[in-house]
Image 1 (cartoon, rainbow, N blue to C red):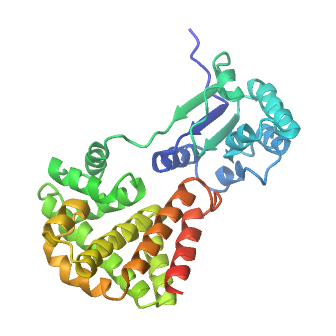
Image 2: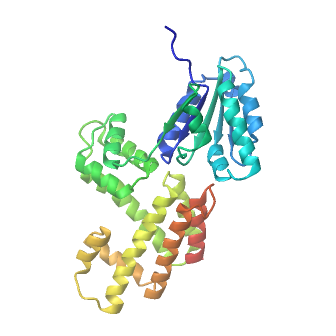
Length: 337
């Protein structure tokens, strides 16, 4: 009984770029090591590749190897968006006709940042053609469970409350979550499980202190220093949307504090901040100090600007490449310039 032959083309799609990227790296690693492997791996991206070129490349006989890997990024998504155009229709037809005829040594990998619709011609082809392989990468619905699994991967255990707290702090940012789990695992060194107190010490306090520093610089209109700190945080692995969310959260707290002071709102400021923004009572003096640098009108304007920036980033208004970084640069230049 013959075994099923290895696929000659693959589709990795979905918004979980962390896991998807890991799978791409595994495919590259399976090509081997050394010069021979690197000579048999090529990568192309939408907007810079001609379909015929990628197909010709993947059918080129491998050099001192039994496989050739060609990776094309976001091409299928791009073609789907332009499906009404004559060129896109021709390219899709070329791909659909070529895929079932790829040689057995070919490994053509389509990497898509978004989930492809079930009606996409290449996905429909896979329903009848056995040469393809598809995998959908969705962002996990339960971040606490994902964090617990990552901890095991770092030879550590994490208590459920600690995993839930870390998930609450970081949201669906898998890259930052992985960095934090690795740091926490190194901290406990296998001697005990990671606890909620460790999250507060090593994650919450450090992130909050850097965000306080950033909003301090913005409040003093020190645009260059604020931009430099932002890029340092990005270089350390913090995702743009996570930083944007942290800045938004900080300015939301400042608006609450300023409203209490300017409008004489009755109520327990510490309790309201804790319920609405998870702010600890000890943070109130620092928040009052920062809020004093703004008028309430200025804070409301910054708040609207942050909401608008967040919407534009998530809707692709800053372009597909480094949109979050550009958004942060423009935001800080506008507020603190």
